[in-house]
Image (cartoon, rainbow over the protein chains, first blue to last red):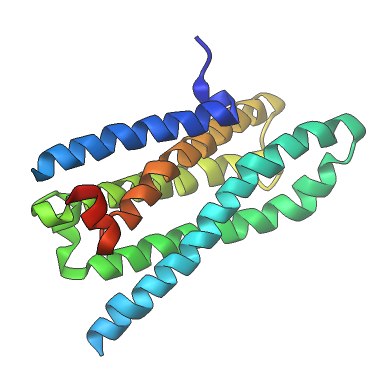
Length: 31
Length: 167
């Protein structure tokens, strides 16, 4: 499997997915 | 006066330095790395590595440190509430602060020492340079990835955006 960080799009998409995961974790912890 | 300096000027400085840090990070990832690939083909890469990269790295690494220090100053007495997630109100900024701290570590421990080898500021064999190039590249890309949730949590930690995102 290719490292997603080797491409700019892979990097941006990884960042967006990480944002979604962390957002939901923090939102869950706050409620 | 204390709040004016800590929260008012602190926030201003945090944002100014943060724009310089993340702006240069995006310059490296979206502009310089692809440009160096092209420049290597026509022999113009030394112009970038000799004249542009060292200057960009100078402002990049010091802006990173100033950004972190100004952020820590703003947290003030709530520094541990944020970093240790001691109070719920500090969960969003604590998450952003951790992401920023990991990024600062990457700048000073992984990117800068390896860039010194790549740019010839520190002696290194060709093999060491190749390894340094890969480490610096991946650390820089990791920071680009982390900057996306980091900026989200920085802006989602206060004001109407926080209400919109976290209720």
